[in-house]
Image (cartoon, rainbow, N blue to C red; front, side, top):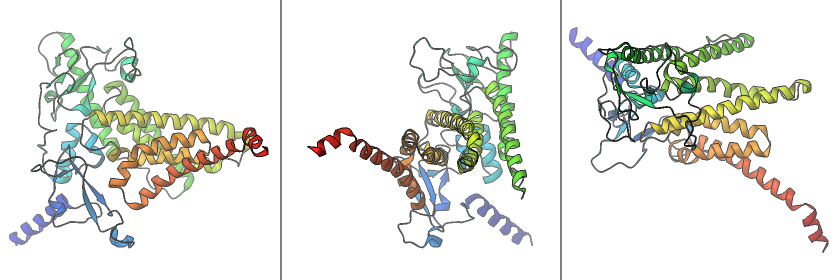
Length: 403
């Protein structure tokens, strides 16, 4: 009957909108609302404090505050996963398709004017080089603008890129750009000069790039071949495709746009997976080991640079969550690789990276992952202790012993 169909539909929607990872629904936890700037995090599997039964702990989800929550303030979490760090249209599309609602949180409500020049309002994740300050030649940005290599430079004479922030909107026409530097507004469909129309096209270029990158990321996969050689070939093919998308996104949207960081992390994930297998082959062919290690160090440096940029980007969004909420796995993967190299300098660098997520792991990760973080940190401490002991056995100490 219609009443039974209606009830079944209602139950399916309740499940679709409220289930957590693993299909679990909780009486209280599933009632926590979403925000694109959440103040809390759900940790799956608990923290192990309830006992050693791992099968039971996997059925536990714990709600933890990610920042100070004032009395009377609503507790919120994110339903978006990694897309919490994407731009407004992608967040809304993801929520509409998967959770069947449009978000009206503070981050999604439009504020076309800036409160002050230091805190621009709007879709910060989608900011692009200002088309007024940095006119384009055709579709693409000039090379010094797209890469913005001097973004972190303290040199007052260094070239600085000015970024314009889009208004929250689902279509290109709704996403006017505001630049805090020149105080100018760029419209997607302006009335007037050809120059303004060319500036407005940058919004449409950005919007198309976002759609293409989201489709790429949402459908990313290597096919699942059982043959190892085929799998390796598939991984290289996927990486090459990601590189092409990254080049398109960077040349269209600049280095501070969410699409660039998402693609960088996708490539980074593939690179981190390959580092371990590369280290395992060292020693099998001594003649090629030197070249292999040189390539490995280059790749590791690129991963570290991309990860640092991702941390800077995440912090610039002014969210309540620690950037490690998004970047924890990548950081641990890089630190593991560095410690695995074995030399003192690499181990110290690995310890520096793991220190970034050490506090986060203690608060939000399960005990198994906390042990991994501690093991990586201890590897550097053991290496440092061994180095100190070797120095202690040097000529000066020997002379002291003889006396």
